[in-house]
Length: 110
Image (tube, rainbow, N blue to C red; front, side):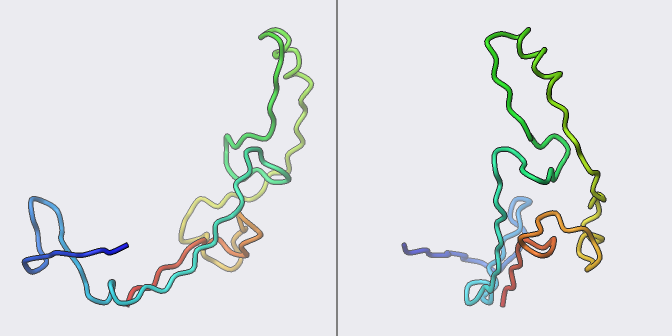
């Protein structure tokens, strides 16, 4: 695939939008991207409030409501990671242990 950038004037403000095409960005971008597995249902660890961990199917609403009472989750509350800066600390709880840190991607331009 061929990509061509056609910036006629110097970088600047055009209609409220910034136009910028630094040469270093086009020459080299070093990256590391770790995409953790995202199963449809949480298994072993729930990572955020509202993450689904069970599915229930029933013939009608009343059977479903009765069956819901049989689901008895046993959660061990993990320390929350709510501040992006604090999440970078080596002592911060890791959201995706398979990655080894809370940094999932790094892009270095230039």
